[in-house]
Length: 143
Image 1 (cartoon, rainbow, N blue to C red):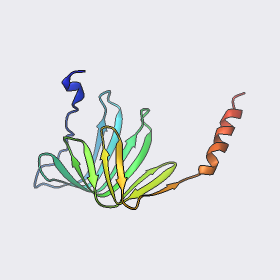
Image 2 (cartoon, one colour):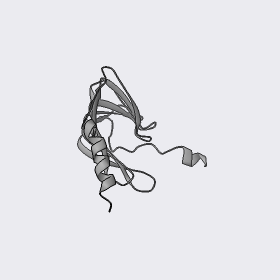
Image 3 (cartoon, rainbow, N blue to C red):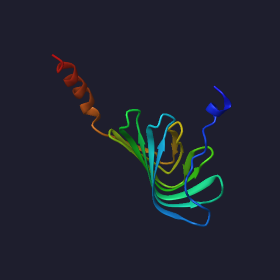
């Protein structure tokens, strides 16, 4: 791979310094044009050339087939458009169909969809007891 392949271009957000933007919905696509994420931003403010402050933001991620994967609720966060990393020191909630996890701070790489949650981290797992039963039903149904 060449240098161009290794370095992803910075995220482009239509926010000018001194001109806050409200109610933004910004889709993020991969190199193949598949929807990876949808940024729903209540208010965005450009801090400098590299950073955008966001409040009342909800980030929706999608899997490879384009189905919703998880939702991250961020009351207050900062996106570095060069590194593509979102950081927050306010309460964050991550929801998926099978769990909900909360914490006081987070760092999330929008490129890799990997992150780190810290401070009073709590996880609630839904229907854990039903999972094996569901697998058994799927095994019996093909006839």
